[in-house]
Length: 331
Image (tube, rainbow, N blue to C red; front, top):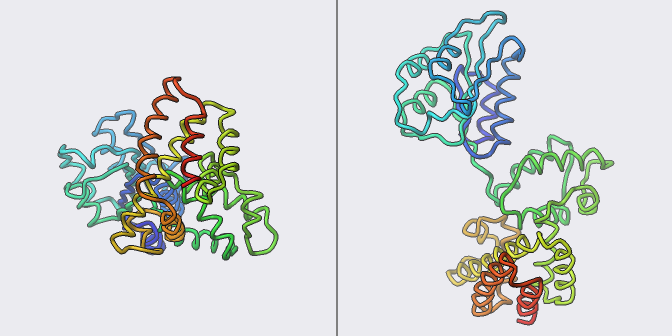
């Protein structure tokens, strides 16, 4: 079950067994806390936490799950990093306990991955609840953002939405904890119910990848002097050059992919899914890609690989990237 449906289901009857699995810790943390809140758990007397990273014996886990409450009215066990949802090991006793849990006992498993074909997974799916905490794709953020803004009692229109999406557009991955914390901070510092683009620029902390967005923007707009200035600003810290190289490589790769899909008849916001980007950013990228010749992008892609090697081996400096940026601007 996906996050939104899973959280809605928690408003109803609470099950005795849950598996929260996937790479997105934000979803897992939020789901875990809502389950504990619904159970009104006293974490001092009613919650037992076992971390499988410390390699506890299977018998210890089983004993904790099947024990009767000592002090409180219920026995709640949190089994973190459960590594037995992807292997071939058999846990017959654990399977039997989960099938017929004591009504006062509850267990929450968390895992980075789980094999749906395993018996243990199927049992939990049948008698309890399973959260599939997959990372959000760029084009799925709007639903999350709408829900977050609603919980904050705020709205975000036109230019602010575009600015927010542009920040996300160049991130290698989406960190919902980062977005959650930054939006909370913005909401606390904004009067009224509307968050504007100016509010985001003024308050929202930009990670390094977003700060570099201005560089690729300048390149796309053929503003060579501005792009070189931004490059040299980053080059003041030589350690940042590999990050700039990665940024340029990713941008050129996306432009090439956009041109490929456009040639297949995929245009506008429909580019979002194949490019795994927010539809607005994908549409903008598609328009930008039309201003580039495929040959130049292919040449630059190879030149960036060579520049990256020379930078990392001390055989080149910022001038290697400067030449490439000027070439792209003069296309």
